[in-house]
Length: 239
Image 1 (cartoon, rainbow, N blue to C red):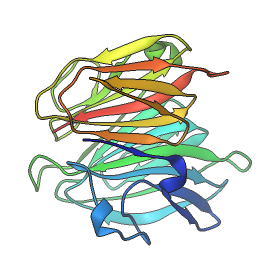
Image 2: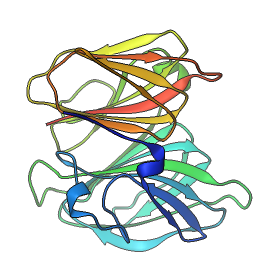
Image 3: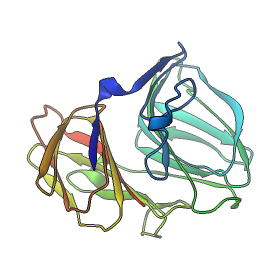
Image 4: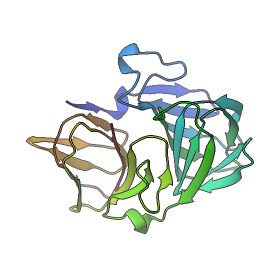
């Protein structure tokens, strides 16, 4: 199964202080037929206005991954963590038995754009934790860089699920690949630029804001195409 969700097919939520594009049912968007893809429950693209943010609120039994595309996102939680997450930073918050956090845009002028993903953990009621790490563009230029992993991969942020989140930026004509995996799912989301994906005898083109959900045993070949700027994307390999 390969399903493409175009940017326009996402649900748009605009509350004034935040503009969001939801790939799955979330908040005011309810669609039982689009509730999740494997353990991926939410995939939101957010633009947070200057001096705006999410007030303190709780979570439990969720693995939350955020990637700051541009601007700065300030994070605070009741585990004692406070940090300004600049562009290129990834954070993982394992809510486990419970965590309270808030996030805001500290800038008075600049918006912050970030991708947030929610996953089911591999088991409930684990101890909560939070970690972050900054990745340079050069680290994932024309490469498929693992940034979050439940497999203990070196230099990745940990997560309580048997998955790996990759980040890549491809210049036109360059390629990366993910080898054949039995009984696995792949979710690819395009942040900017254009890519071509080949999976077996199927070939598809994705544009900014597009995503594809793949549940098919094949070698994935991803190529940067026809872009004035490099193509940046997130790839999730999961059960």
